[in-house]
Length: 259
Image (cartoon, rainbow, N blue to C red; front, side, top):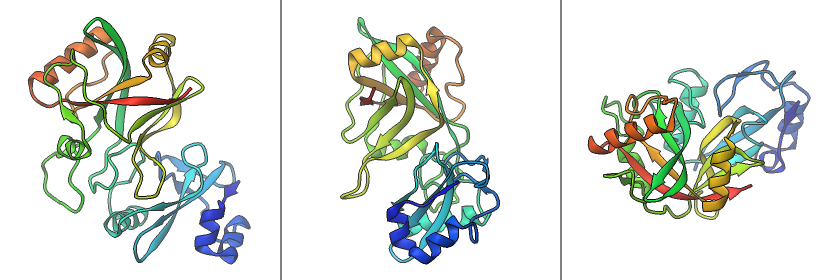
């Protein structure tokens, strides 16, 4: 149940690709490079994912419904982090993370609707489960918001005001389910997931209807422990307003892609 795409085959060669497909070099079990839950290529549809740096490459495995088999260009620094992860020298890397950070944390996503003036907009609130460190740093400080700021997310003073658009980013919805938040790829490469759901997330009818009407999703982000899992939209709004007052909330307006 292993898939080796044509671009991965081209990189690793026909002989190695055929050995993988025959089970000679395929893992008996693996931790999905996307969601970090266990997988078994004998029971689970599995993708081969090749991370390619300037000088080296690392072959990893993922659930087929998490990631397709593909080649992923990365920097050598990111690739070293991937090697450490695969060999168990650092905490696991998830696609539901701020990519490339050595202190990895799953990004929790809360869906809701936010009033901006008299209009409702679909919203996603992102909060990691642990502090996020800068790539290559052992410093204890959480730089999640700083890293997002470098990507173009803006500090929010009032959740009732429309955040700025972020070029190149988008929210992918397929058949009414949330699949991923996409960021610009490397030069010449397509968009890549910044966050990707392990399984597509079901959305309420109201959220989908507002998203299709507005064609824009408001994405808010805050450090670990700021927002929490709020059971109602009014409580979510209160938590966002509190985070904004404390200066620990960033946001961007992203176009909706998909259906």
